[in-house]
Length: 88
View 1 (tube, rainbow, N blue to C red):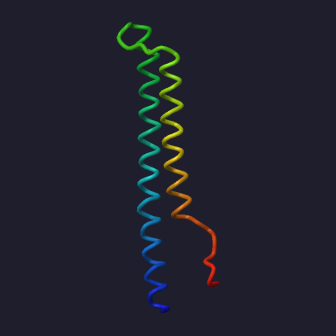
View 2: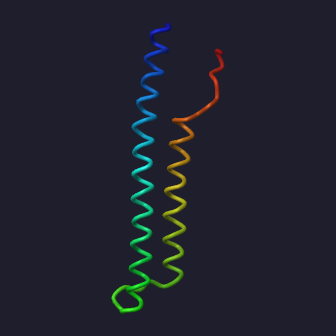
View 3: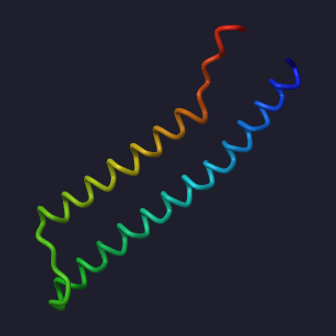
């Protein structure tokens, strides 16, 4: 039984490492995409090649923020759960 627990612990650590890196990459890409959209909006409206209404821009920012934060919280809550098992 002890070997199975150690294997499970090792697998959990590997998953934590893998998914924490993927979450970090996802968040970095999200921030870059939002920054690019804001730059496009700023320069695009000045030079008339890209223009979103304020409502569309705020909806996009809010929806993408909520989605990314939600995914981040779900994955981290599952992978980094600090509750001890009932057997202990």
